[in-house]
Image (cartoon, rainbow, N blue to C red; front, side):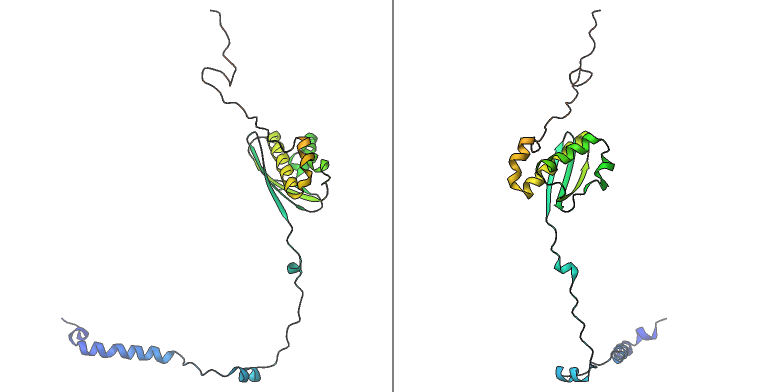
Length: 189
């Protein structure tokens, strides 16, 4: 049995425009635009907001000096900016992350020699290796950042040996040996 709608295509064609008319009726018609002078006159008068000086807009962004240091298998990314002299390593204060005095002394050495203590904040992110390697990487990163910030300090930093990358790394083990160079124990018989 055939549908009545399928049997009479003329009737189907007549239904579609009726649906479109319903949709058009639901859409509100656009109102004519009023000239800007009339809009201002009809709008209720509101007081203009008081000009509030933006505190953040007035402050210039601090200058940040970036440097990278490496030692053994450690890498340190160092950011140095003007501040009270706070040193942060991996999100912790220096004396919390590196508790030994010799590590702290090594990190502060380039800052003391160049008289930058208390003038710059240092933020270091370091990974790989152990405490000694990470400390050496941070020292090289700080020295390079100081060199960028104050190029006149180059002689002081070179004289202390802080700009020299220590290229010594652990030597690989060779086959036929117990370690890199340690041979097996000699057996006479």
